[in-house]
Amino acid sequence: MGKYDDIEFQRLLQTPIADILAHFGKDCRPRRKNMYLSPFREERTASFCVKSGESLWFDFGTGEGGGAIDLVCALAGCSRKESLDILSIINGRYPPMEDIRPRTSPESKKDEASVIITRIAQTFTNPTLIDYAESRGIPKEILDHNCQQVHFHLASNPKRKIIAIGFMNDNGGYSLRSTRMKISTSSFISTIRGTDDASGRIFVFEGFFDYLSFLAIRKEVSLSESALVLNGVGNVAHALKVLEDYREVNLFLDNDQAGRKCRDTITEHLSRECPETNVCDLSAVYGKHKDLNSMLCNESTTGLPSNNTAYGHKTIKRGPAEAGQDQLG
Image (cartoon, rainbow, N blue to C red):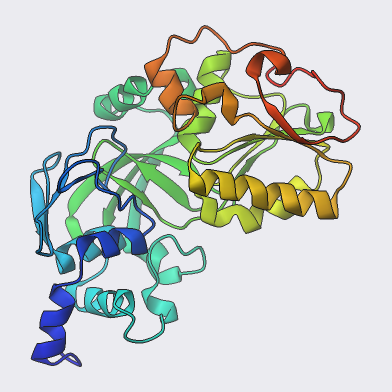
């Protein structure tokens, strides 16, 4: 096809599916033999099957499947011709070019154009999205106040109309979630200024469903304190300058290697640039779970304790903020 001869084309077709998942920042660890968590949606039971020894996949949740090219097209929202360039990059054939970055790159204008938004509704009316949010512990009131119902299609498939929960970032892009899809128009941080921003306190979340879970646990639709959603640990560098403005930084990051690395990056930066800032790691609150939303979905929560000590949180660095200060109002 085009600049790729038959031998190179066949080699690209054999790109391991796990390598493609890793390239796009998806979970590439098998949960059991040949079964992975789907890269297209949030799920706890693996439903994405990879045929052993072959670059073939099948998503039992959607009934769709295919090969390496099909997967790249679905994840990047690109054409089949463009997918070959991405597969070549994954195979280390030549350096990435600016116009073929994965969707998670915040600077890629081409990625933003891959999602064509046709309508944005401030109030949710789609029952599937409402049910999906509620299945994850998020009531409609919180959804309406913090997210938008986004109607769109992919540039590569304009006939397929899609509706998803949209969470806007500071660049005007959206993280989009539904039962069948987990993509972004562009990836960047989201900052939510509280009504009492002068408190000097900010809560930091890895994904927006963790932020919504925090609100659900507190039974509020918004916070008096400020919040920052990374929309992926890859955006932590964009968050550091924002966090310098706060005296108390409370981290609700995932209980995995990426979350811990992100925590260390924030802590080390603030220790160096803002030694008076108090940084608290609150991952112990949901220590049995991957993240805050997982705890919300799997445990009966009637509101989190109001005292730091009750959380069992880890204060990473002490500043002038008093120990035991109420983290969650």
